[in-house]
Amino acid sequence: MSNREKVIEAVSQLPEDLPVEEMLREVEFVLGVRGAIEEADRGEVVAANEARRLLREWANES
Image (tube, rainbow, N blue to C red; front, side):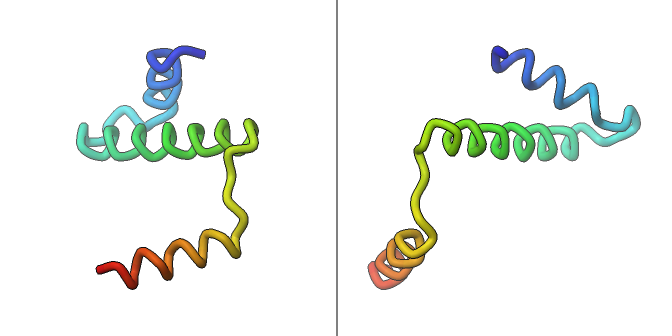
């Protein structure tokens, strides 16, 4: 499915009276989740323990 088709599908599921700003947030969220699922399906994941370690490293860098 193309990006355009993904956006059209996401928008078509929203209420018609939703403000544009809310639509944009919803579309961004839905596409972000779908993108993350596609990455996971391709095996592009980080184990929870590794993610925690990376977060601690990043937090200590600031």
